[in-house]
Length: 390
Image 1 (cartoon, helix red, strand yellow):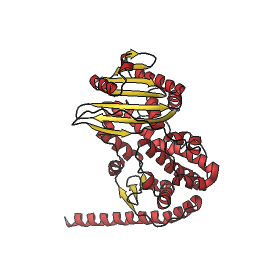
Image 2 (cartoon, one colour; image 1 turned 120 degrees about the horizontal axis):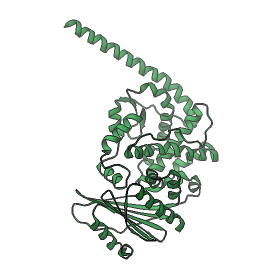
Image 3 (cartoon, helix red, strand yellow; image 1 turned 135 degrees about the vertical axis):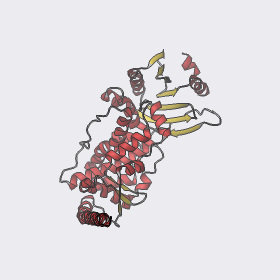
Image 4 (tube, rainbow, N blue to C red; image 1 turned 30 degrees about the vertical axis):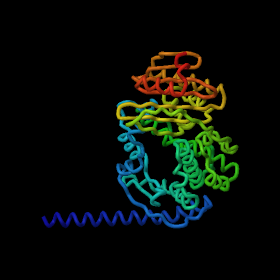
């Protein structure tokens, strides 16, 4: 028994020595990495950042910010299958993909303890985030109110880190996208999460490459002080250079009484493009989303039902019509049954959900709910019952 205790103590001591030696090795590499990143990026590290090791599972839990309401929303928008659990899939997805990350709220590096061997490759990228935070305050950028604003900010942040990493590794910055490869997953939710994860790196790198080409690091730094406000500006950098604003779009409010909750958001061009890409040809989806001008998304929920209202304003009548065609094609591709069809209005039943879409002015309005009475109630409040009857 004593021998077993001694062996256990010796093993623990050796393990501690190995971990300590590994940490010291990281610190030695870290000094060299920091110095090189500072030189390339032209920003000085103002103070050191501590780091902590976590299991991949814990990292998955810490970084997954999708909840049951997000799950219901993605399922309502046909971006997740009915049998998928967003909490479970999101945690597993993050645990699998995240090697390390910088936490700007707690000012700490978090490292996956099972994937630390990849750390030296990741550190230059992550130290760019430290410099960004110390000079421009990442929490300010990451506290955006809407999905669209947040994804635009993340694209600027990750695009900058990708360009700096190119230079760190001896490559000239290019407009070529960061290499992720196409998703091989058959799961609808995993494909959605892949798209959400890849956008800041892929489109962000292209966007920051344009900034760098136009004015070097001065132009990139200026963008942190006057950041892009829409994913449209990321996808089409000229719209950032001209500061094309998002159109203000408002929805009628449906009074539903006690037990109902309303959440509102702006989804943006990237989200709408992804929604289409999951079900129709990628080029057609991108083209149909490209004329986005602004949107307003309202999501009503209670314990047993929901209603979503997605009002999208387009740059032109032609853009509106192109999206209307693409969205109807999407519904057909997932087995929708067409109940009503006219030049301005279409109504479908898809997997026990009713979906109504109409054109008015330069806008398209989409309503969806498993309850037909909720659609009728909203159409009546919004003064659109005549279009429905048509």
